Length: 418
Image (tube, rainbow, N blue to C red):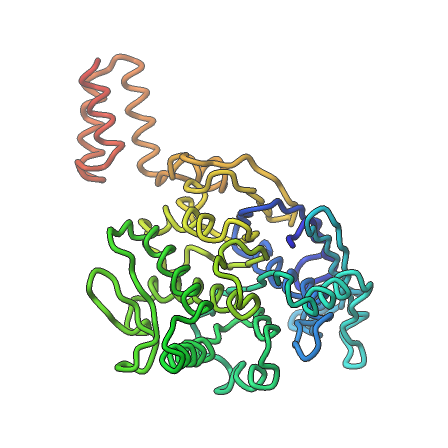
């Protein structure tokens, strides 16, 4: 199951927007404030249509604070607020050759108004699927920019898991902004105890560990596979790489961000499809805000490829500001949102230089204005065959930007050829 289309009307700061999505990786790009995060949040509401078909699973609705407002200055220190209604979120999904449509609305901002899920196609499909014990259940996840922040409640997710205790648990809290790390830790401990009591490996636990191992092997280009498991010595989940074993919460923000994202996905896949050994072969939709957050450039070059190789059937919809992420991504759907909230579908920029991505895809600058100005001075002097002037400009460039600067090196090489 994947998104094909999303239509928004009066949702948060978005007046009206219609977006098409493709299979595989979709990258949302654009300046701060154009609505990338809002689009991802709207998609979690749209997927509430699916959760609506499952009993005892909470879904995300349209809150009164989600209704779009316009402010108008009435006097020197006074303003008026006008609410734009209704709020409408429409989505079209594809599952195999089938098309499913859903619509979520809220009449207005008043407390008497509630979220309404119109149409029954998606909910009926979900209900049929979850009641077929042989059916593969798709994965749905949202990773916000506050994904590593502590949860709002100490018992976050635990009580609901205990009440259900079946594979629907894989959908509990799947669209929360905070990761439910404690529930993952409790589940891994439970699996370790089951393995000890039964004196054999537990399939769903081994499947989770394999996914994390394969992903990090790709990210770090290791010779030996890394491991993740619950350690009784540390009483928490640990990560082992090149003979070094540490609790995950001891690791850097970059390691934690990646490991918890992958563990969360694998954990939910294991709950949803406990008899499946190859969890990476299952489909679904994963939404990630600022995939580049906390990641060193070396990892930014690899993360899209690692996600695609580890989860080939998942539709990823991710927001990013990183030119490295854009340049590293082959066969992706590049979706730009401009300052007027217009949607543009751009050609991919695989293997473009970072400078070219900044200028040709992100409408930014790849070189500081000061450096660009002296480069133009150098080119002018060279074109006029004024080599003495060109040499002086290079000296200015080297003094201001250093001899190791690529532009300085290129200018020196160009002058030598002349």
